[in-house]
Image 1 (tube, one colour):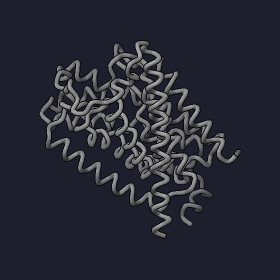
Image 2: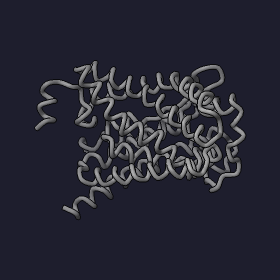
Image 3: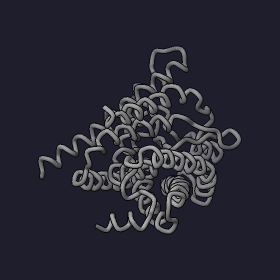
Length: 223
Length: 100
């Protein structure tokens, strides 16, 4: 759902850009304080993988396709701060090199597909994971979070489009949320599959605060 | 060697997706494009971009074969993100070391 140039009015893209710039600045500061050694190559691999996966549009309904967003997946592996930075890097490269997403709309796209999905997604996943303990609970939490963030991203994009006077909210919001409720199912499946795979083969690549919830893990996090 | 093997496996998997699986991508409009088309505001998209992108629409320039152009663009973009992602992590880690 990369917004092109022309859909957003100047006040809307400036405001969205300011919020995103602030979020990226905070992420940079927070990450700079606790970058683990492993995160350096992991940020590269996650960025490369999500960029590549975003190219693979899958058909969803009559004549419509969707593609992975990957924000929740990034947050599950890298944490919210590094996740936000990686999603921002992906969106910048897509806009500058591949003309996918507008230059003026970049801030809005970063807000919708990076900041929102990584920061809120991280919080929502951690809440759900507590309610649904164990590995299965973590996987269900990942699915629900990824689905929800796609629908919320699309809804936020709809709000920006409506605020810009491009199309009234009662028309654009149900349309955007509806089609992305379908796309979100695939996002949820890919996110869950990736998490399940890594939990099985390389648990240490999952962010320590996103591992399945057990009493032992909770004690470790509190310490 | 074993400690860093996952990096190269991960990068190889990402490159395979970007260069090959991307060829199987559905050409249909995505969710936002579909809504914009159905609701009649797709035309508002600015057709002359403010900034010329070197590889518009994920096509490597100057290559007639669209599949090859897409695969090359995907391969290149994946490599760029690997370098950029690692670079950001590396820069922040250096910054922390200096600050510590």
